[in-house]
Image 1 (cartoon, rainbow over the protein chains, first blue to last red):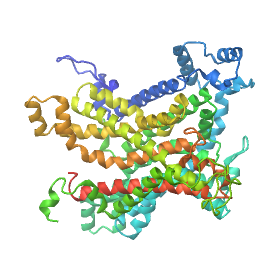
Image 2 (tube, helix red, strand yellow):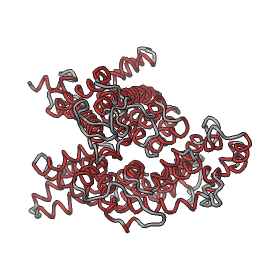
Image 3 (tube, helix red, strand yellow):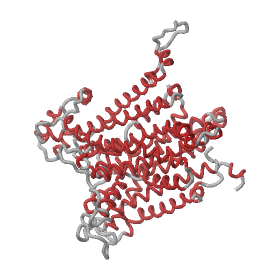
Image 4 (cartoon, rainbow over the protein chains, first blue to last red):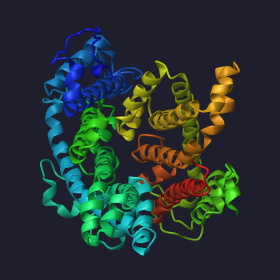
Length: 350
Length: 286
């Protein structure tokens, strides 16, 4: 990556403590952080370009698409100027980017077309984001211990009954699409047993916590896919650690088995597990798009799908940018956690 | 089998490698059945997949063993007609994924020059977004036609293949037989085809099952969201969402396509896993 390239040094250069290369050697963590954040910024810049192109190559433009085929040229022209579509692509990209840096995501094309007084997107994002945060947050709280516990247990009992009881359902659940799992759960808990609602519709401003029952099936669906996929990897990591010499020697030294497992095996199995959990959390960012739609839950995923359906490109831009940022952000945080957990990786990574 | 034959490279042809595994055998039988249903289904369906036969959401009856859908069409006929798009789109996407992945991975791994970092960074960028998000952006830009679905799924999934191919190629490039071919003055395409490609087949095939199932899932998800194939097309993904309102009156309208999709994905994963497991057991992966 371009950021970490040290400047050219002449052979007789005096040792300069401020030289980036020397500072990097002295602070591997800082250097690593710099590189990862640099990489993330590049990814996000690429995201803005990708999202902008995807929402601007439409045959016709946003105004035509939103107004429909029967709109008069005058109506189209009016909306075009209201949305700033008459400016050049580069200028529109720059103003979109500049606005986002101030937390301004522009105006909803549909709202402007309908002449609604407040068409600002930023204001309408808070509620879906909070609702998605609650759904994803509750899932994550359950997801992490479940993945670790089931994966470690399956690894410890590899090849035995407990392993099969965990691994086989995990394999099936982890491979299925969310909407198949969600639909099956709706059938069982709503149609057959009549104990849980099939949708998680909320009124405007209503907190998901006022209808906790409606959250159960969406969370279960996300858990089934994410835990299923994660368990397999944690299990493999556990099996690998148990074969290491230090586990063998700890056992030979007569250290109680429980202590061997907790202090030697589990702790070392944890490092790769953090990356697995990071992948799981990243998965949630994409997974909520489908799961929220299955249960009509009013989060950012439903917001995005509705925006794509109504062809409101400005809203698509905003939702896509938020989801991409979360995805990239989770990745960096996970890398940092891994690095602090496993000191020997600090030098290897930089 | 003796130790000597077990150590040999392709001692068993790969179809036998899969079917001698219990999971692989179950997966293969399931997969063959589903492919038969999906491809031959439109020829044997009892009614037209778009004809309205009676009350919407009517339960199973004499002429319609799976009942009627939300518009009163025969669920069995739509089920038989709705697998073709799932398999063909998923298969086409997988083909493009491997063509693009091989081309880019081989070029990057073989060139070991400026092309390598440039291609691989581009791959990293694609991998740093949620797959479904990229799919939805594509649909926003170009609509939800079959070509767009295939292209978008391929764009999202080929980077993983490119990475695997590049890693395997870089490793093979250090081998003596490649150096010998270079020393003989053979041209790059000939070296890639004759020396490199045969030696990177194993990791590529090992990945095939999971890619195919991801392609199926991504495309089916977009169809489920109502942003892909348009009604009245019969498609398993689309059938699940359009019939969700009648899950209480005729659950089969939703459960039958859901079961077909689930079985297809499970079968593909079983076959893929069996290949990897048997391959590493026979020592071919070393």
